[in-house]
Length: 329
Image (cartoon, rainbow, N blue to C red; front, side, top):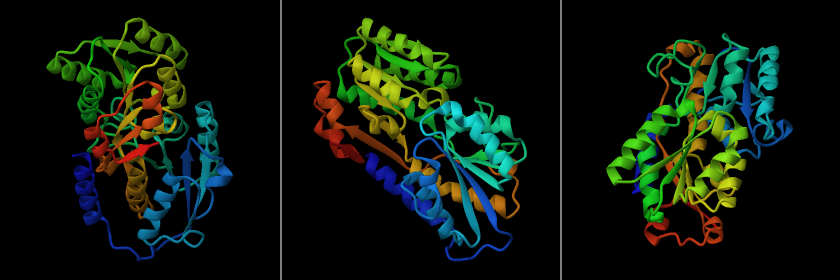
């Protein structure tokens, strides 16, 4: 069961967490933090409205860092406007922060802005394919951190869709060139089930409306959205379009469900942000990011939006609800 795997992952994670309370020696540090929601002023200080930023701060506290005494954050937020990431990246470079912790969609802008400031990613669909690192074992540049392990969850998401709907038409798959491996994995998983897939490849956000309309015209039974920086930046729009086309959809990140999506199965991002503190600690103590292996997430969660299910006229099976980590009413 999903809940059992989450507990096992959490236990393994706790077992490897260093002892807390040891004050790191060295200079006062400035840690850049890049998010996509909330105003920058709202994510400043030792406690913020952002669960992700709070998870990072909690991880740093457990490692002995004291906000205001050994470090401060330099927060930047795109406030839901991904086109602002290049501007924010330039501001962090100008501020000469010691390290930057950032969500996946901000990575292209950060990679272009600096090759020297260490960057800890809190989740990338495929950091090798996207060119952020040379390999997971040896990143090689100034970026390291955590992946979303998206390839490994594609089959599971299709399985969950199969529990929700009985496919009478093709399963539409929304993807782009950065998640080609995920698309290929979806094809393999679909063939094993005797299902037909409808490819909805997009190259830029302007193609999303037409892509989702194509799914509706093809009488697609459901929609699978693959993780990528391009698509995840458009989570609000994609969830809205899926609802407009009355497509039961499953995603790899819960932020889609928070914005009206039906189902999400994937890594717990707060856990990734908490674990990012380990990378920050090692880097501030002298480790080179290019020599710190990229890690995979240890906790996965299933999130269900019952309000969206009702609007689509769907009844979520009790077996699926019992396995859900969170149900949004």
